[in-house]
Image (cartoon, rainbow, N blue to C red):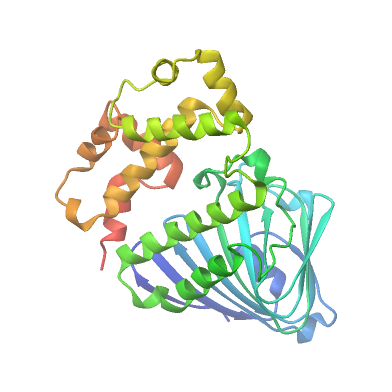
Length: 318
């Protein structure tokens, strides 16, 4: 039967050993319809860690097929990505008419808002990260190119991303809660880098990509100014507002949305900074350009699922 252990406030680790894999997946992870050769004899286990809205899942199973059908996707369900690192055995991930066959060390991804299926061999083990799509700074349109694609264990930065996931899985329950939160979001950071390297969002070729990088650098430098607007960005780069919007739109972004995203990310980092523990939450929001503490609080909760004060308390709970 399921058993659980909660090491500290704001994050939790739960270990399940259960024969009914479909019940386990649906109750703790996502809804799937599962087929196994001998259901009565099936064995599987799952360990989940929930940290700041991010779920880390270590899975070990016998061979089975899991289908995430259209009727499995609930209205209003949080749009997430699921990144999976294969540890042992072989898995086949299918989505968007693509199938990725992954072996130990390979990484693949799927979008939880769309139907998918997973075929696993016996002795299957994987480490997965399930996180809100809004945390990723890669446009969703570009991410659609990567679902059910094999990111090979020996290519690019896949080995580095895999090493980070393995390390986090190994140390997560033995480090301070603040470090756990920082590490969890750093995992998303290296995932973002991995995806960018795959879909060539490195901005090396087109002049519009170079312009986008320069504008984003300017935005980062001006985040503390509450009057930072798309018009200001256009003026600073001696170009028209229409062209600024076009450059961001081509990358699947909006100017205002990018400013908002970067402000929240800087605020989140400050809330985790031990040296800023005495700084009021409202002051952190104002420091990064939010005009009122109320606006900051609502924006932060909409993105991270908790208020800024709750986020800081959870991270400092050790």
